[in-house]
Image (cartoon, rainbow, N blue to C red; front, side, top):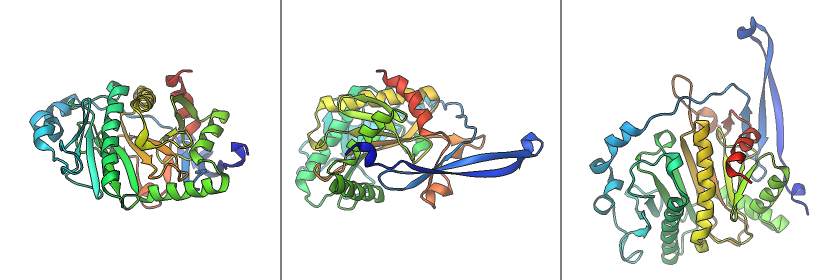
Length: 345
């Protein structure tokens, strides 16, 4: 069965009519598009408002103020905890310059932090595929050890708050690595819906989505190695980028350094695009299937974060926090078209 027969890209438009004070109260209108995610059915809204990013913030002074003795991640050997011996005999997982160590303020039964390097501040365009691969390999080694030690774990993820605007409480770039017995709401919904899709069609949702979006082109960004990049049809933020490891039975715990280098190549190109557009901060999460045969795809979701207007208003308001409805000021198709040029052919 063709991918187009398995997916529904549903949307509807509502139009607001008003007398516009900027045009001598002449009649005007503005549309809102409501889109529904093809997997979950969750809706989000595209607002066709004029949108301009604020000037980039300068982090040089803040980096100088917070580095060195003021930063625990700059003093990883002295100021960060150690894993118990049964998990890691050396106390920490190290790959290249990346180091994974216990999180002093855990989010689950197993909770770690991975720093990319000793560098206290890394600009978006200064990350390299090698840095990203090493950080993910160190995180992967930790989660492998957790899986071998604790059979009750059924939820794994690797997460990233980059810069304070996105919730980063320490400027030194780092990942949050989480494993536990309880899934988050998002993990549970993705896993459950993916399992239903797989049971019905015999194919993983991510595989089918990528096949369809490659054919449609309008939201497809590019491919590096076995990783495809695209924008979400129903974005959960100002923009939402998706990356799928689309091999049918790809196993996170068996991914090689080359696979992570390919992933890092795509991510650095995406970061270059975001930087070129004026974005700096972002949230990202790698959703890791506990069982690669479950029907769930290994995927990354990345949301750029911004402030809006002269008050530096948060881009997340009551719609997202209380209504669980995301707002986006730009259509995903326009974002994908811009980002595609950074991936080349």
